[in-house]
Image 1 (cartoon, rainbow, N blue to C red):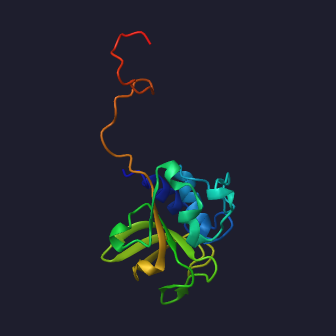
Image 2 (image 1 turned 90 degrees about the horizontal axis):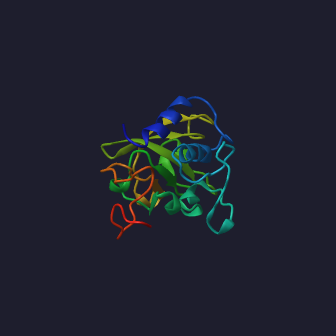
Image 3 (image 1 turned 90 degrees about the vertical axis):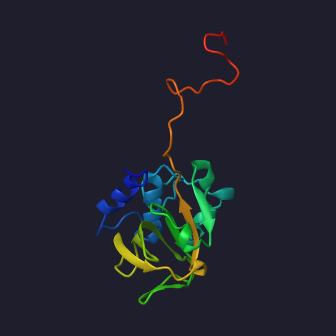
Length: 181
């Protein structure tokens, strides 16, 4: 099981339902909250906002620069290439760009999604307020170039070899076992 499965499974359980404030932002907020990222609000349970410079930025295209992602171990890539996209990431589209034959992002707010799959130059997403309306739905999108994407926000990778923690305490460097502290 991948670390992002918890968030993706949660969004899948919300299919055909409205979440938060019915905007695309709520999908990113719900996912970030479930994945222990920053609280983005958007009418979701995760509304303890802590934006950069204490400013409230509500544009979907600005999510990557609006919050302190690095404080939560997440990374942000601005104007990513297709190779930079990762399953389980938040994707922020630029303002007023065509992302399908039937959908152009909002001229002031842009649009956002959560990537659930990558396949042959396309990406599969969970979105709200796309072509299917104000409900969580699955989409299959074509990558039209990095100029259509403001940022991709990637959750931390917790895979790897566990460290030697004992009862939640890291060993103190330079102190031998049995020494008095």
